[in-house]
Image 1 (cartoon, rainbow, N blue to C red):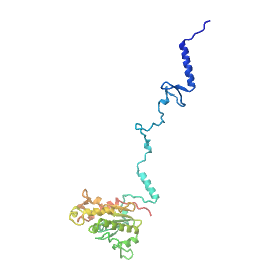
Image 2: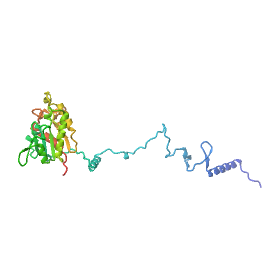
Image 3: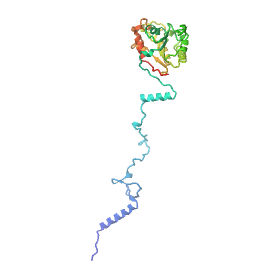
Image 4: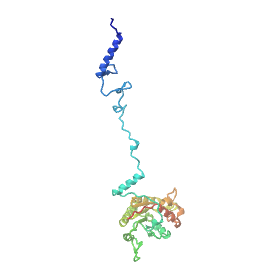
Length: 306
């Protein structure tokens, strides 16, 4: 009987298969350069291509000029939000809890807001006293009154005897919720804006010491008309503006507030008193008191319960 012979190619194929099978079991594989290399544990095959041919998604590339280090982007949801009214309210509440006074805002009020209020001023405020008809409002006013003598002037009356008493004495006897102060037109020819504001601060501080719970409104020095401004006297727009800028800084928006009636009494675009509102270029006509009143009522401050 003849022995069965196998073709040489079949024998070679079997040898190759046996050879590579043995290498695979021993952990070897064929590298990219054709060399037999030890396979690393954990490196498998993806679609016939070894995973190590691609950088891992978790592998960091070296920091070079071509691959600069990048800071991780912050998602929009994690960015610090812009401050909103709600956040501002929380901030104000926190400030209050921390003992820090919070800034208060103007609100619209009705005429009853002026009941029991006190107005202190010169001849301009006297217009309100004489013609406004605000029977439930008190006035300490005098023609020619200045910031230098306001506290000493006897502009109030003793509620029992009817005798005249000084503003200082009156403020020490009775407490007010709201005090409106307007002075400055008579002081234009005296001192400087700095000395004026220094004295104004002394007066406001004294009123505050006598009226610790009151809301104090510092009213601007009203402008004069263009005709009055052009007369070349010490009563002029630059002098008024310089003093207004100084006393405006005395308002802290916590318990002392700045009111600028020039916003409603100026002729638009001029920065000077509208001539329709005045007979002499300085004082407001009685029939325009409602303009003043409406401005005050649009700038009320909520009075906190005591």
